[in-house]
Length: 469
Ligand SMILES: [Fe+2]
Ligand SMILES: [Fe+2]
Image (tube, rainbow, N blue to C red; front, top):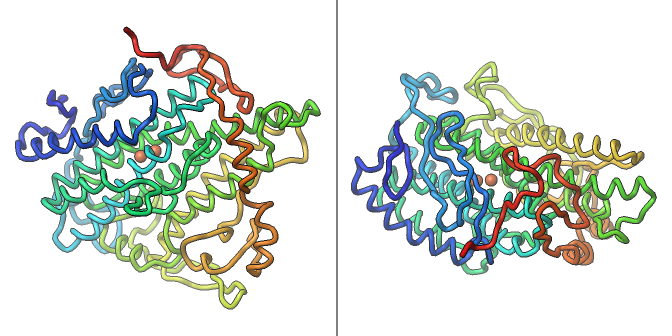
């Protein structure tokens, strides 16, 4: 479908639905004032080399140009409809997908959409001060690219709420602009999205681990029987890939820099780099927070969502059977020990998705370890902590485990905690390195240069430039 030239770029023929268009046009100024209040601080007038989605066709969606962020064309883009599409899993497998919300699933779908939607503005709020201490213009631009796309993801979800959920949907859309990350009064829904992202190592960890949870949630929703949700999340995934790239390569560059110094026999702290023990503690912290985002190990909600065709598995088509019949073996805590449990597969769907996520994270850690070896440093590797470590959700949230997964008493855990998780001193040290580097091509002391620039441009390109007179 051709691009609709209304004030809201879209491929959903918005101008044919005047009521909806007006409702969204009323929401738009509220979105913009939210963006100006709590979005990227200090750079709203700068020109940023950004890509903008202008259509969903291959090659068409990524258009690069200098843009002031408040002028970014946040649009509504759904992947095209497929004729005769069928639901791929659950009790409704083989039935036609729904273009409208079935009455019996209205509450569940609204909750799923609002929970996803809430993470998008939350992350922009968490990251709003990072521009002031960016390690390079390249990184500064990537931060803003991530931020504007999270803004677009909010638009994508708000469109679904306005279009398919009537008055409740409009109220939910308003509340998305009222909650605030870290607020005691109106916090964001999920805990990891209330954690401050005060330094760039946290930002890289967040885009590596928390955004990657987003990838798996979106992929599970891309299977949904509610087709507008499936079509919009599919398109969001194409943008999400860049966020994951920023995180994975960001952590890699931090590790590269430190490993190079160590291989030369130098002390990282003396050269303004981040010791690998601190990087490891950040991994432990952010990975365990992200694991919680998948929900409890045994979940009747997850079973219901799967049965009803609302939320599938990661790449559902790759599975042999799609009803979720069978069982899943997992270990759960009981009186300080681990017991084996055989759980109905549908009730273990959160764990099934978490398995895919952990594999993907391990692949990234393997790449980081290759960078360490390549720097000529031996005997040091980075590790993912065990899924039982430092959990805040599910059965393991009430017990303690080491990064290797061994069960511990509360006292044992407390005595080791400072060697496993970042301490105030670790955060303070990383914080002390956060000085801005705005000279094109230059990098802060704690991070290696990326392998290449953006969109074929050189590394010393002015990816962010001061307002032009
Ligand atoms: Fe997002
Ligand atoms: Fe993202």
